[in-house]
Image (tube, rainbow, N blue to C red; front, side):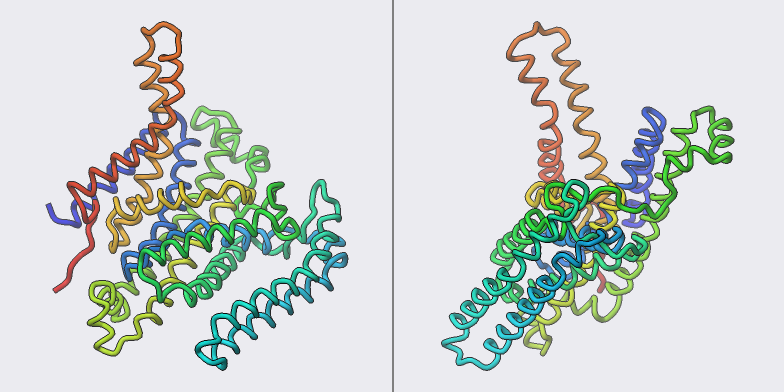
Length: 435
């Protein structure tokens, strides 16, 4: 079987699995799974651009996804009346302190003697941090005191949330540029540790700076890019649609809204895929694979390896940021406490490895398949355990078996990863090798 036919068959099986959920359970659940699969596929594409193209081991994926989410919040939410007036001056001074610190650090890096660059750079950053806090602390207290029950933060610009997706990608790209300038000279294992640590720092800031993100109080009620289900329920054409398919208006409105989300997410996925494929087939993509396969040879040919790594690191992080903005849009809220770097970073990496790193179509398939199994494993585990323990008497053993059912998803992810690494180490749809 050719690789193309194999890919078509695998995608057809994936489509049948989603349709089976709609037929056996409900179409609202099937479309909910499809929407999350589409977002996961976009995020897997971003990681594949970094790892599959250039071999960069980024473990800070959730940090960039969270930056995409806050980008959507800051663009789409309406501004909180009085918040900017309460702390705007001190906030501006804090921003100037940050800019001045960065400028001073860059000046030290360029002009100071080599032996003094590190201590002077650290001293500059530490001093700038304390100066920034002098202005930021009173600003944050003043902003958080404005209607703390329902607001307590700056709010946003009140613009369409689709603009927030692009801004979220820019936020992630900007952070990736700063991170890349600091870490891309490290070896792969040190790069992984550094990106994980920086991701934790980003998430800690988003959880604790309430004036910006409301912290653990969460930002709810994000604007929707598609019609609200409650509004759709009152539409006459929804009633006609429900009567035609023999269902109620609530279900029909939910299906239409989720189908609209699916079309929107699919459009973003196709655009990102088209751009990624164009880049992969261009001379730039061939150069990136050459750097990935033999860095020393590429450097000997005069290629700026660190500069190219920075490019691909920024591009992949921007795609992850867009996916993060799409996720908070679907949820309708931004919850900094829900970002679990270790769990979900592992899940995204399983998607890329199982699908086939270096192959964009494989990464998308991995995003669909792994998220589908992740969602369906818990109810399947509960069903299996209920069947296995149906003849057992109530007791500690039965209770322990039932309590262990949700952990089937973690066991299943590990098992899938082991089987793929053993029998298909290049993934379900391997990277094409061109001669």
